[in-house]
Image (tube, rainbow, N blue to C red; front, side, top):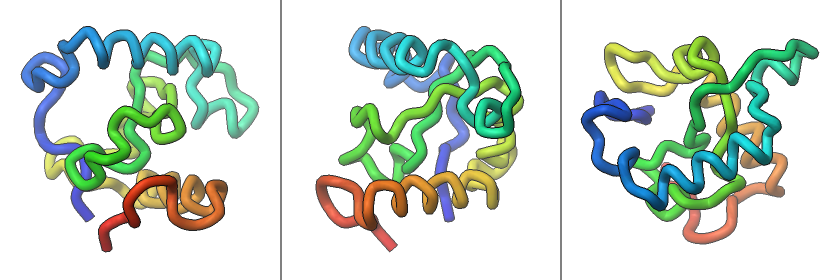
Amino acid sequence: MQGWEQSDTMTDPYYLTPRWRRLRERILRRDGYQCQIALRYGKHVQATHVHHIFPRDLYPEYEWQPWNLISVSGEAHNMLHDRTTGVLTSAGVELMERTRRRLGGVPPGQPPKT
């Protein structure tokens, strides 16, 4: 499965838009600036990134949806994506599947691509 394409916040204009910056801050605030992956295991780690659970290159219809965004630390973010290939790791796929189940199957909007 693909996921994060090999662009980062310095080269992808998406991450420089005022709309993204506002949404990113909203998600960090919603999550108390805590890494939600670490918090799941009872650890308090500062979140520095906002992760698209359903990758925006594969699911552009979900890219602005707050339910598709989660605050994570840099370390957790690296665990969700293979930074050399851009492919979601098994941890990233599992987070996507957990989110799908939490939402009762298919997320709102168009059916996810297979």
